[in-house]
Image 1 (cartoon, helix red, strand yellow):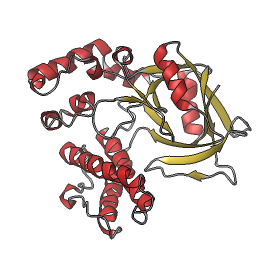
Image 2 (spheres, one colour):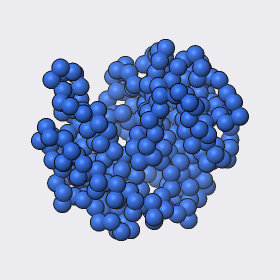
Image 3 (cartoon, helix red, strand yellow):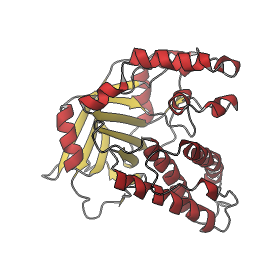
Length: 329
């Protein structure tokens, strides 16, 4: 069994596709023609591993006759790109605050970014991510009540998602490829299917920085303990607002990196040692039991790149701008 991702150079006429290079991209795929190939498209295959957790994932995927797929694509950011991201963040904050009459959840405009700063403003970015979390939970509740949902809720939610996307993009800082190359993709199938993760699943969590491996995506509004570790976000832990991954959903991610970038990560065992040392040094046992399996470092691996090499993938990312199909068979 394999996961297939179809990449295309262009959007075909008549395809229901919403593209935004600064936010999530969305399309609706027709099961009857997503396998069709032409000179402007290619299909990348990932071979699923054989274990109980993978079987759960295959159950939650459940292909429909017409599927909605959302995806994000992250790659190296130049200084010029970075300043553009800062400008887009400030514009999005102002839009959320001013363009929706019913919106009572304003974002503090003191959190607007300094355009031209050449480093991540982590304190502001952490606060902006918390704003996204708090408001998104209310939006989720509204979505359950279509009669009383306010006008333009979908547009408002897109703005919120853009805050989240830009936070993650800006957190990575400027990288003009001198520090190596990394492409990172997140794909989400729009359905409500999910499994509750068990200790057996958590015990399969492993290094989530191996290029060419498909992982079960976090798929949770919030920050897990590993994210707090990377950002040294102790306040979130001490406020007991850490959100570990609880569910296995039809969401995946994978990355492709070059040797320079991969070497910069260090070994997984080394990162694990630093992670648990950070927890101990900051007495986080007073707030959470970080030795439980649910706090294991990494993500759940599901599948491995099958029909192309990593070098092939770098060329595909540069040549084929769009994902236009995702299916399992």
